Each structure stands twice: as structure tokens, then as C-alpha cells.
Figure 1 (cartoon, rainbow, N blue to C red):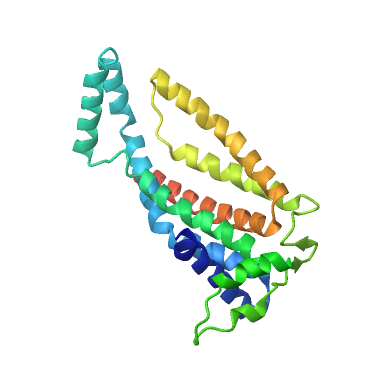
Figure 2 (tube, rainbow, N blue to C red; figure 1 turned 90 degrees about the vertical axis):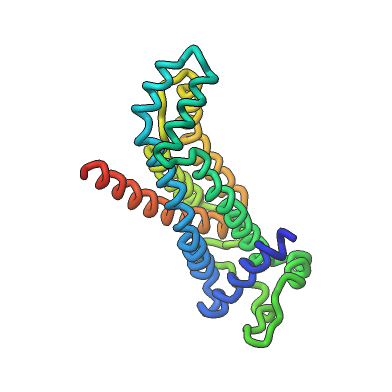
Length: 246
């Protein structure tokens, strides 16, 4: 079910782009990554706008937390009342993330699958290729040309250039997201903020480790996806600053 709904369409779209771009695998991966990120812009904007709205409520939330710090039940009631009056749903930022995650995982699976070069990998890929009259014969494209400059997109980057770029772009994106994340003054929130700061370091390093271990085609996806995300979060942050200035 997962393959049929998410991975197979993305895999075939990647093969189609490969055909249209005259066998340029890296460009096909880049184009597919950008298109998927662009398609998710409305979800990203919704998620970030929700975070911005919650951040604007932080002064009032801090007052409520101080006033009812010894009455957790009343504290929760007053917080929800404030959210209702402001028209903010604190959980609304989670839904876009839940939708984005399967698409991102699907793209990762599609890249790894489409770059199959072994006989077994090609046999496993073949049943997932669409065969319709109005599409090129995508099966005839296999195996894909995976060589690009020093890279074999089906193998890890031997010079670790892409993993370094993954770490840098992931760190920048995490910093932008953290700058838009609401912060409060309670002890629990202090712990959450400490965890968030830790994630700013550990997540980029983890993604760099993944990039060192898997096909460099995945690293290309991660770098381009991060760059698009950085651009999106920067624009949203600028818009928020303009609203505050007004």
C-alpha cells in the first residue's frame, strides 16, 4: 500500500525526469526534490504561521504561567482560553509535518530504488515501473547513469563533500526553525528548549552520518531540500518581522 500510494509515483516521476533531461540523474533528482518541496509550500507556511502566532502569545502565556504556577489544572484551562480567544490551535502545526514526512521518506525510497544497479535491484524495481501508452518506456532507461563528476550517485561520496554540505545546510535550517519556535519560561519548557538546542547540533551531525553511509543521490536530495527549506523559512521569517514592525 505504501509503495503503491507514495513510493511508486515518485519513482516513476524520477524516471520520467531522467528521460526528459537526457539521462542526467543528478538534475532529475534535483528537479524532483524542488517540485516536491514547492508542492508542500502551503503546508510549510501553515506550520510556520502557527508557530509565529504562538510566539506572539508568549508574553500573555508567561503571565498566566506565573499567576497559576501552583494550579496546573487552572493553568491549562487559562492557556486554552487564551488560544481560543486568539484563534490559535496549538496542535495545528503538527499536521503539516505529519503530511510532509511520508513524502520525504517516499522520495528517499524512490531515489535509492531508482539507482539500483545490481541484477537483484533491477529485478525488484521492474514491477514498480508504470507501463502506459502515453509515457516513454521507462523500463528501457535502466540501469540509470549514476556517474556525475567525481560522484557515483549510487554510492557514498568518497570525498565527503556532500556530507559536509548536508551538515551545514541542515544546521542553518534548524537555526531558522528554532528562531521561529515559541519559547516560554516554565521549568518544563526550559528542558524542552535545552533539548531543542541539542537537536540543532545532533540532527545535522546525524544527517551527515547518514549521508556518509548511503548513496550520494540521497545526499543531493538532502542538500537541495535543505536549501529550499532555508529559503522558505527565511522568507517566512522576514514576513513575520515586517508584521511586527508594522
